[in-house]
Structures are given as structure tokens and as C-alpha cells.
Image 1 (tube, rainbow, N blue to C red):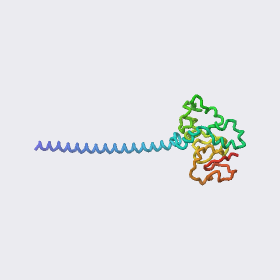
Image 2: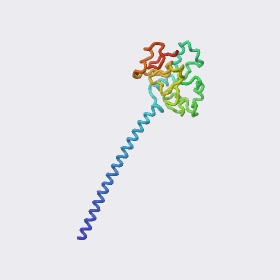
Image 3: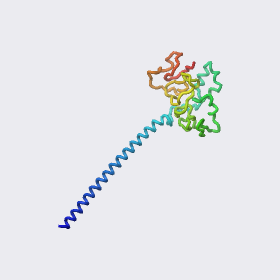
Image 4: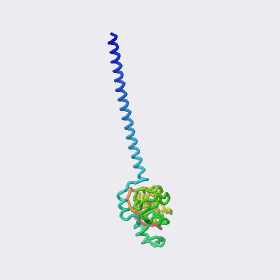
Length: 223
């Protein structure tokens, strides 16, 4: 009788142990599943944030923009054609065919190709010259991307000026479908975006004396 009681107790303990083991295993697997799910969600969220941030910091090369820059890299033929036909051509001392889009007239010499190297204007890094205007921020100060919208901390200098008299605009406004420079140099791709009730459809449909930002295509409107 005592022996049977002991055996019964042992079996009960084993059953309790097995049940506890199964419960712990299920609990751990459940926790692992939760952690994995949360990790995946966080990773996906981070990817989205990186993609969103990359639109402003490190833009993936855009096929259309890359093609335009590679075809005539860093040479502003848009400004060349427009200013040649203007009586104000004498204002420009630098040969217009050599103007680098977005570069201040005071910085032209700093963008000359010297030994295939480029020194960042403020941060001082030295990079290969072929990385200038490649639509990727290599310089901390953003000076290697004067013609693109890749570096939000940098400024794009109009060939002439903006409609409100400034010399430059934030780089993020380059090729956004809105003509901010009176010479139109900030929209050298002439991308057409959705219409805006706040802006004219395009410059051609407005009186020649209209002065203010408008949607592409850009035309010469410098007074």
C-alpha cells in the first residue's frame, strides 16, 4: 500500500513536471514570437524612416537626373542659351558655358577640376572630382552637390536671382517642379508636377511682366 502510494506520488510529480515544462516551453516560444514580431516591425519602421530620410540626405540616384547630369555634367547650357539672348549678358564675367549649376559666382574657382580632386568648401574633406554632382552627399557641408537636391544643408545659387531678390534657394527646392529662380536654372530638368491652386500653371500662360514662382516649364523672367 505504501509502495503504491509512493509510486502514485512519483507519477503525479512527473506529470506536474511535464505539464510545467510544456507550459514553460509554450510560454518561451510565445515570448520569442512576440520579440521577433516586434523586431521585424521596428526594422520595417526603421527602413521606412531611412527611406524617408534618404529623400533629403542621401537620395538614391534618379535615372532621369543622372542622365541629365552625365550628358552635360556641371555645365549650365540652359543659362548659356538664355543669357546669350539677353542684353544683360555683360553682367556675367565668367564664360557662361562653364557655369556650374547652383554654384555661387564667387566660388567658381573652388570647383575647378584640380588633379581630379575636390575639396569640400567648409568641412574640408577631399573626394574624387567625379563624385561632384553625383546626387550623393559626400561632403559634410553638402558642397559636392551644388546642382542637385541631395544635400538639404546646402544652397543652390540661381544664375541671376530668385523672384524675391535672393541669390539662392534651399537645395531641396531644386527640380521640384516650381520655378523659383527668375532664370529658371533651378528646374533644369523641367519636370512637370501636379497643378497647384497657389501657383500659375506655367510661365508661358502668364503675362510677360509676371514676377513670382510658377510651375514648370520655366522661361526667362528676370527683369
